[in-house]
Picture 1: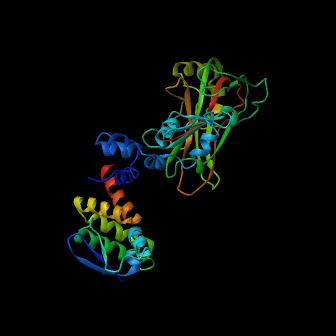
Picture 2: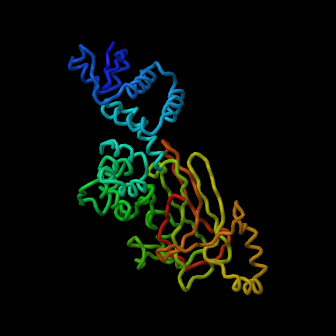
Picture 3: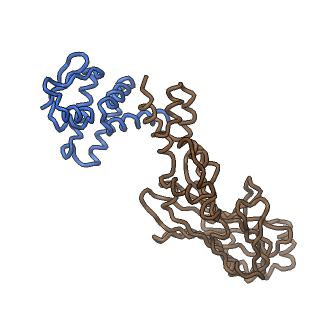
Length: 113
Length: 279
């Protein structure tokens, strides 16, 4: 289990497989500096909760078929407001979660087009 | 405000047109919109190979956006036998196959066809019809080199000279065939039909024309009467038909125009090539 600490002091305990979807966290685990939890100064508790929700669904083999995941992603992204969306982009960029970054950016791109 | 890399990621999901217009939003958008990351996404996947096959193969580019602009201005490839172009706003691919790159029956016979440099042609040679009673023109293209999920139209680029004859009696048949069996057929006139002239002709040749017309229905599958239409490059175009491309599929499309049923001698039509462009 890995402990993540948001910028506003909330802690989240999640399974390693879920956390490793973030390349940033994966590097930290490799470098073995996760003893006392990982502080994420750039991510608030609210956003981190959303990210963990996404990562839990997308853990390999656990989320369901490709079709089901697509539908889940669509609902996930359509139910968030603009400021949360932008904060998610920043967090996904910082945490280096490519699939979430592409999903959020595609959503903004669709809004622009 | 989002960092440039994120903005670039967002913009890369839009279109070239949106990228151009979003550059005016802020300096971050402008920088993101100029980035190689974004323009690499809009370039056709085989752009390196296209450039190496072109007359510009030795040119060096300072950015992917510059390469994109170059492709929008069109590129002569394969010994200048074909023209490749992408649309500035959508990034969609179009090709013009030169007359040398398509098959024209008897075009190697000097008594039927001559090859010459026509002043406003995009190629070094166009095929000029001297005389024939058998007009058969065929071009082939693979859908894999075109933009996916796009509706394309094929057009024969032509000119009719002052001394043309026999082009307006019997309509020609056009078809688009794909290797996986789909066929789309229509008919078209080879030159614009002058109604008054037609009426005069019918007075003298009415019966003969009726006989010949029964061999080819003047109206195509979709009930439209087709004629050549003007282009903005000084040429006319005859629509051969339409086809759709699909992601991941590489089909061979054969586009043809034939007039072989009228046994009517014709001459004076100039063929520059076949254009395949998104509709």
